[in-house]
Length: 304
Image (cartoon, rainbow, N blue to C red):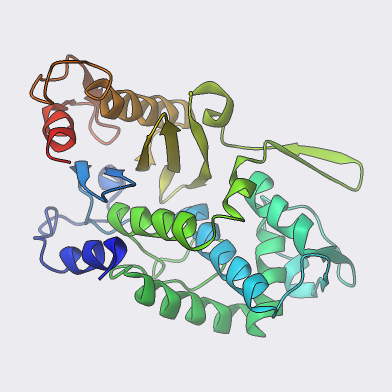
């Protein structure tokens, strides 16, 4: 059994920490988890199994399906994907594609990563699934195969749908699956800008340039979800996956993710501590603005 299978199996034995809450209430959008990407040890979690909205983190699953199709030969990187009227009618964020246009698979990938284009998500879904509805069902089947036990997809973009829910833990499993299964395509998530029809679009993920070692993955936002971020960061020989859902603002979310990253690496950078030193940093919980003791991160790092 590989590490991901062990991690997925372990999920089934965990108690749902926030199970008694009304999980999708406006004041209860926050969740986070930090995972050592090498051992899959969870070194921090808060409401990690509580039901949340993925927003555009959905597009990481959409891209997983794209990369799988490229590997199998079902899709080519230079293939021109047709734009339907349904795709063109999607609300922003979008490229503004017109019915009858085409976009290459390569450009579609970059548009999903940087612009988080909803029209492009539907173009991809219709190409691979025949319809967005069928593609979303295939996404959910694949999610179960990967170990995402509490995630259901009903669209390819992450646009609001009260049925489309996930957990921070499931998003960490997806991030790990993306890196493990598609390492040759993972560098797309470091794309900082993308040009289409004379317009240059810059990534929504400012941590790519602001935080050392961050090399992906994806932001997300809807009113229901709050500000979400799936992040992977590598320094020296260590990599962590960080998921934060439900931030109040993009800045608060980014600051929170940065704090989680620095806390995770703090112990690794302190010689002679043996992982026993309590972290001298607190993290502000984006849900209720209460300080969270991060000693668990240090303890988790020590147990790796």
